[in-house]
Length: 193
Image (cartoon, rainbow, N blue to C red; front, side):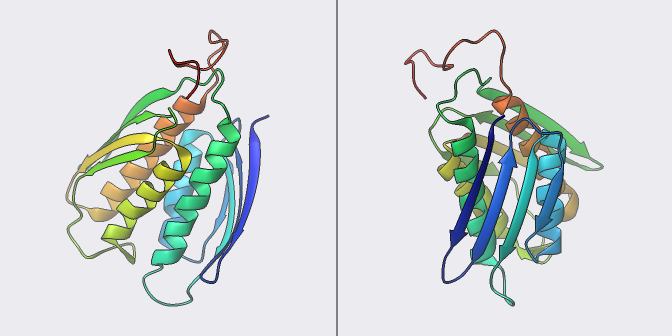
């Protein structure tokens, strides 16, 4: 079973995270930021990943450090869980409509962290989170997991746009991390990710 746990303590945050790549989408998320918990639960549920997170950070403010650090730790724990990348599908994509909104995610779990994030939220906050922090979460996750992701979204309702993004990312992530029974080694012409 591809399960990993990481604990990270800084002067700003305390995070304990466990991920099972071969789970069923069971999530237990407690970051103290309800909207963020909802988004992470959507990601894990629709991606078929079991994710357990207990995180504490700034009691007040914009939660920048907490959300950034959750992205860092989630990226690191995913990278540990998929290891050398043997037998993973590696490439995946997802398209998720949510009422008037639509999100598209194309992903390569190939060891190189990179993010393209195209779309815009209408208000300064999304679910109480500064809109730029949403992009920064995905940047931190991708850089630390070695994932290249292209995320594009459109719509008029910020909640719907954001939720569609998290769901699409989760679906693509779950598909990319799935073991392909036809593969014997690492899915790369180089022999390594």
